[in-house]
Image (cartoon, rainbow, N blue to C red):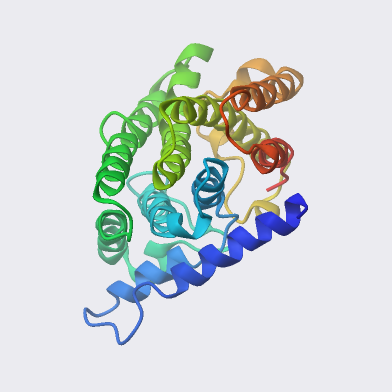
Length: 291
């Protein structure tokens, strides 16, 4: 199976699973509707794909990781809903359509995000997997998404609006804000398969390298792509005076760094017993994406 076919197969399984979440007659006004509005808004589903792919790479069946994959996407979606709020980035556009609070109001958007975060842990803890794997995955998700992970990265991002950051500070912020959830996706995939400690370490290193490359590509696209291409508002970092590696280094060095981090991601997979062909191709795909 070639890379694009395998990627599409993962994405279709994830979409089907998510489509079956929060269905039926909405019992609490627009809450379910608001949750599904953002959860089913499309996107590349990179994080849940990583969860399923790492499960397969570690010797498991990717479908057994679907609850963990859905949980990652729910946490990611909640973070986007909250990130778009007026008190945060104040964005009107996400994935090519109005942001959640523009459609449902700020209060419902906050609650939809809150509910998605809680639902993510319900997915993990009720997955049909051994209890030890479920508990390990829940702990991974809590740590990577919480006060020393993604949320900490958001804090550093907000604080960075007040002053110029150096490259080390930007890398640290990106590792928390973007990298932590990518790391959770990879680690939870290995966990679903009952993988080894060596495979877990390889997943960490792969995620760290891919995460940095992913964020730099995002920063490049913020200055080179259009809002129509990205499905969200572009140019906001420059408008708000935010420091990025692109603004500090320029496009040429940023592109060089993406290539180097992609090489390191692939290197991390060597000699771990992981089946790596798809994951190597995915690193290349993410490095060269155009939206």
